[in-house]
Length: 293
Length: 116
Image 1 (cartoon, one colour):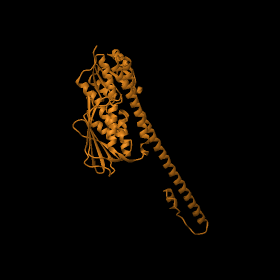
Image 2 (cartoon, chains in turn cyan, blue):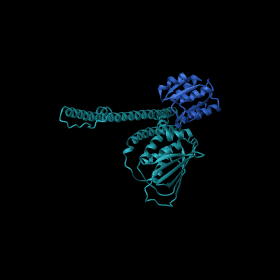
Image 3 (cartoon, one colour):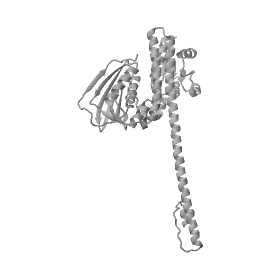
Image 4 (cartoon, chains in turn cyan, red):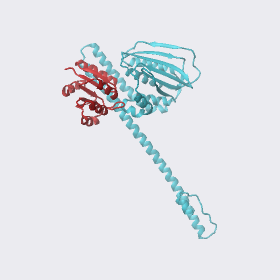
């Protein structure tokens, strides 16, 4: 019976005869053996769990490395191609205006390269960054200024913030808004990019609605952005992936709304109450694109 | 000789660069931001040449090229990718040439002259 229990993995002492003869000695040896087996099994289980943890860690690191390799191959490949393109055009430029346009293009490519390196750094450190009381309105305003300086398109932003918001975030929130605005500017084939930004508070979150007059996002791509972002990023770059990871750190998220024209992305971030001033209606129109010199 | 060219690439700035550059040589260029919209454009217009990126959302360049060749097997597709590992597959699938990114814009014109 005892041997059957041990065979079944139950190593607790089970035979306690008090006969004082060799049967008792045998029983004691049997119990010692069961104890040793118990310790050995526990140690094996621990070792297996540790090995599994290390294997999982290795697999995670392998997937992460593969992800970065794919994303970098895509993004660096594009940046290099754009730089080569502008360099060729610069070499063949016949007037000062064309030369300046191509020099600006090369500068922008260098900035993109810098931004890509920053993105990787942010992905690495974002989990450990400190969350603080952060001025959302100013973050949006800074991002608007930055996208206007960065893009070579004319960008009009209609800003409608219903009040002053302080949210649980940090400096990297600027990058969230910049990425979304950059996406809007890139996928608008028109000469003028029009972006409407609106804020509202709901269930402890500030929802920032960012709507553009672009080509919109197909249902297929929307599904991939929301459900399969890692795979999508390997093909289309790091923008949305970084946005998602930063917002996750803030316990926030972004969603893509169904709209008839253009694209509407809603960024939700937990609000810190107090310090907000209701009924302050800030409406600004940034009509001219201030190009970076 | 003026050609009708369709460029399919997921990077807007590359599309604009290539388009502006090729139009200087008198070609009529249309652009598409992914394989699906490229396919739609292809169905509506006859192009002399398609310049195709590989890594794109949805249909990748290989799949989009196969779809295009299924519609018109005589279509000339010039592959342009930073991933040299797809060169063999692209050429086996029926691409007339392969440009490894990054390349000089002049190489596109030379390839067009060579293949069309």
